[in-house]
Image (cartoon, rainbow over all chains, first blue to last red; front, side):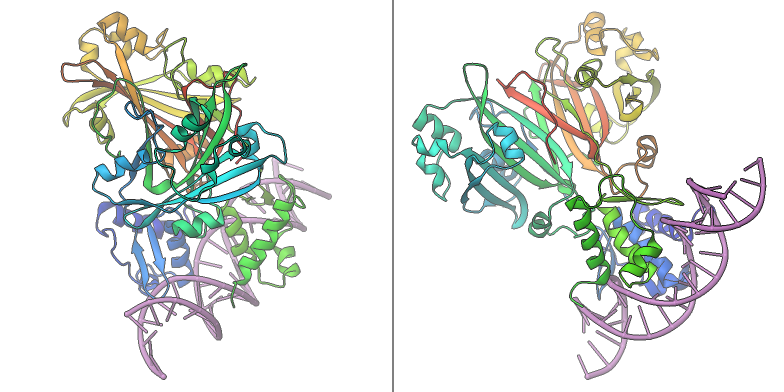
Length: 268
Length: 268
DNA sequence: GCAAATTTGTTCGTATGTATT
DNA sequence: CAATACATACGAACAAATTTG
């Protein structure tokens, strides 16, 4: 038994999908029918389908059947600094200009504001001791009414006590928080560092994005630490966490002179 | 039956793993033993373990048992341009300086050179018509003797006919190909665009990296298009594809002034 | 080096539950 | 309510990989 039967069946079905014999959205024969066709038990057919499912080639819907997965058109986000606004890509309004330029509708929820103790990554990024109070401003974003990103920015509560009280209002801050902090406190962001990693989604993220609960689709976690000038070099003053489903997003970063046109999604 | 039995069992085991009762590397009880403990059939236990496996919480080894997965210490790659060398991060020797600064040993294979027709993404990135001949320079990279990245750069064959014959030699080009093209052809890279996406690994990639063949660990695909100056704006002249396993790599990009220290891996 | 014991992997059959049409 | 289709669960047998004696 060089290759298990369920793998042979999976391979055959995969070939049919990739050759186009079974186009996206098409319903596969029922497990019963496949069982007869391949002369295997229904359990073995299910193993084959499970193999295809874990590769996101098909998806099963109870009571309906198994369907060839549809390809999602990826959203491209440019991370490099916008030369005009000076805003980092993927932030505030800038996050949407690109999406809207493609004729898709983008909306963001009202920010949700919370205050709690900085923990784990937030402490590490902001370089604050345990127990430090931070303001968390969270937002949910949608494209064409489907969930697209979860974003949360953390600021030390000290910024509020120094006068940046608008950080506590659960509304969009006109012009963006970076500009607001500059006006209010004279705090200038001199640079930022993006950190990108891929990981399985948390449960709440799976729920929000409607990802399958088996964790086979990862999320891209984007951490952006903003720095202000300090005596001994740049000092962090805010950190933003953005979470995007990995299967429908691409990131683009430009260095130096590159074509001005919007970057089109790459073919996977 | 609100929550299926196999999920309850998986949840219980997961809790034991995350609480530390079952530390990384520890062997779980055998399927037989778990079957008795939870009063479920072996198949149900296997379903629970499969659930944990798909989340990379455990890994099973035939003939040995199931073990709590060990956390890999991620490798951090900085993509932004090195201020001193002018080289893009993640390329050539620059790709390794960061790794070696952490006391890890990094080696690259001799480049493998091939010539063939540009296809798909290569055509799209280089903006060349179907049938265009390109030079492909491929390299495998290792950190501490474990496979770390697969990289392939494509150049139009025209660069060779114009005099950049070293592109065809299966050896490292001293100083890097970007510098070589500048010396030889006066071709200056004025900018580049990075494009990042996440996808399941191809079969050859799974083999090379030793990833589980069920595709549950994705790879990060990094495409870098290099541009030279042209009459009507920047024109692409090379494209590099780098593939990294997503579970052990982090990317960092700096904009403006940021702390000079090496970026430490973030906690997931 | 080989044989036995252990452990996971594959496959079948069967029964029942749950979601959708 | 009935029919259809996938989901869960049990039991059993043999295969393949690995360790142990």
